[in-house]
Every structure is written in structure tokens, then in C-alpha cells.
View 1 (cartoon, rainbow over the protein chains, first blue to last red):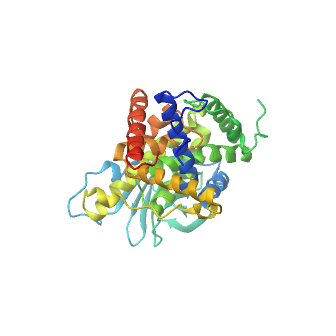
View 2: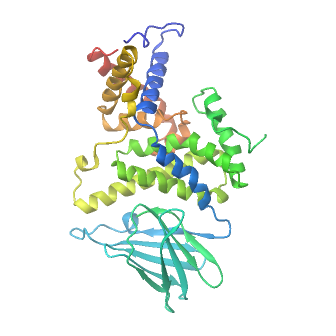
View 3: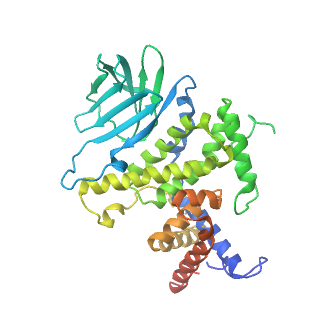
Length: 159
Length: 212
């Protein structure tokens, strides 16, 4: 059961060739035993519908997971995120109870909470730009902000 | 080149070249068509580079749930990046690097939640992917299946860096060294020698077990 490696049939038998064959065999094993799950493949294909050319993207400029110094004993510290698109800034805090945020400069706005192609929830920002939701995103999520002037969407993140 | 009519199986007909020049020029064209709204080109990108993204996620030993979330997040984000992409032929490197960053965040998050740096916590064993049973219908297939399983087991037992590098290298179609570099944050020049060392180590293990 091992005659397909290292016997040099038709390939020469230099060590590089052997490695090439082993790598290729491993590649086939991966395709067989650990392929991209079909549902994930489909989800990525379907994601093309998420494209929205009218919407500006707010980039992640702060993520407490990366940018904050971990505090010992503060295991339940909320995840703090800041997104920026030009002068529009969106501060978001994810807790076990839900999501708290603020739009700057402060202005009323509608905020869609997305976990896939369709909004999972909607929140309204008050005059101070503050908003809350009892939805705690888990997995991929993004926020889409509708102000009177424009629509801004945050980069997709994993909550 | 004619774009928009590229079949989803475009990658399977492309000859294998280490460094992937053929596939990767193809990727640039596909990305440009997807930017123009061509859903078939997008599908071809997902099929051609999805296995690379999955390999990067698997190389980082996430739990299945985390792996699924990271995979989706990477593709969702790519829909936003598509229209701003400056070097379409480097889409694979962008995807690999984005996947890596999201994987590292998962590790950070896990570490904070359990307040430990114990690496075993991050070594959650995968439950995905044992769909090979259906292939074992004939004896010949059974013997082949057994061989594949032993090979995979020996691979899984390789040390951290070797397993990680090989898991990315064995994406199908094979990634370019630039993509591997982006996936693991290692210099392009060190990939070749490390690959050789790791494959030799794997072979030695197989030989020790009489599998080769």
C-alpha cells in the first residue's frame, strides 16, 4: 500500500520529487478529510449579495482585543470597538447584555445590526448619537448606519 | 481576456506550478470581473481561494465553531474590500492575511475568557470532516482510505510549526509562497527550507511506523 511513494516510477527518485509527491498526497488527504464544509462554501458564494457600492465602509481603528492591554482579573471586560469613515466615528461596546454605541458627531440615525445578509436587529440613535440593543452579536457581524445624509457600514468582524 | 464566462471549475484545468503564477493571474482577472458585478467570477474566486482561507483557519487550530465564523467573516469582509483592492492578483494574500488576523483574535479572546496561556486550551480537537466513510466501499478503497487516514494522523501529530506550515501549503490549488507568507507571517525565503524539513520529518514518522 506504499508503492506510490519513493519508488521513483517515471519521476526520477531525487529527494525533491519524493517531497513533492508526499505533499501532493497530503493535499489529497486534506481535500478528502478536511475540505471546506459545503455550507461555508455556499455562504461565501452568497456573500456577493452583501456588496453595496452606495455605502461607505467604516474601518476598524480600535479593537480592545488587539489594542488594549489585558487587565488581569478583568475577564468579562466588554469588547470595545471604534470604526471610522472620514469624520464619522462609531464607538461600540459589546457586553453579555447586548450592544451599546455612539455615533460621532452626534446625530439621530438608524443602525442595522447585521450577522449575515439581512439585519438581525435595528436600533435608533438619539440626539446624542447613542444607541443600545439587547442583541449580542456572535460570529460575523457588522453595523450599517443610516443618517439623513448617507449610509455607512462597518467592516465585518467576528464578535 | 473573456471574463464573465469563466467556468467555476477554471482552477482544475490549470497546470500546477509552485508559486501559482497561472492561477494567480487568473485571480486578478476574476477579481476585476467581480468588481464589475460578475457573480460567476465571484463564485470562481470563492472556489479557487476558499480552500486557502480554510487551510489558514485550520492551521491555527480553532474550534469548529470559531473556524466557521472566521471563514465567513473573511469572505464577508472581502465583499467590502473588493472595490478598493489595488492589486487584484494579490487577493489570495489579502484573504490569507485577513484570516490569520482573525484567527489570532480568536486566540486572544479565548485566552482572556479562560485567563490562561495554556496552549491545550487552543488545541480544541476538530469534529469536522470525517466524511470519508462513503468512500470505503471496495476493499481497494478501504486500503487506500486506511493509508490516507494514517498519513493524516501522522501529519496531525507533527509539531506546531510544521503542522501549521504544511496545512497551509496543502490547500488545493496550491498557494503561492506570497500567500503562505501572508497566511503565517513568515518570510518567503524561509518557506522552502522549512517545507523541506517538515516533509522530511513527516516521512521519517511514516517510515518509523512502516506506513511508507
